[in-house]
Image (tube, rainbow, N blue to C red; front, side, top):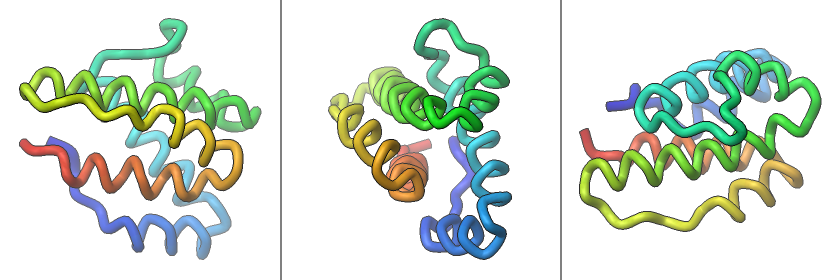
Length: 112
């Protein structure tokens, strides 16, 4: 369903490119999750969610939206929901790169 990416490579490229790859990854993740799950907090379109990343609050929105969309995809596939929203939000505030790694890992482990 999602393009498989190495979690370690996502982190390394984000650090080496001083965050440029992180922006590319966020753009792809926001769009992929929105297309697959169809959920968005406050009816924010993916473009607005991406722009909010530049104002720090976007990280929190990303964590909430990622958890909601991943749970929606699990529900569509008949899998039990996971309550990762608080984890994503906390790491979005403390260390956003950990949120990237966690979300990419969940996207990699999602059955097709």
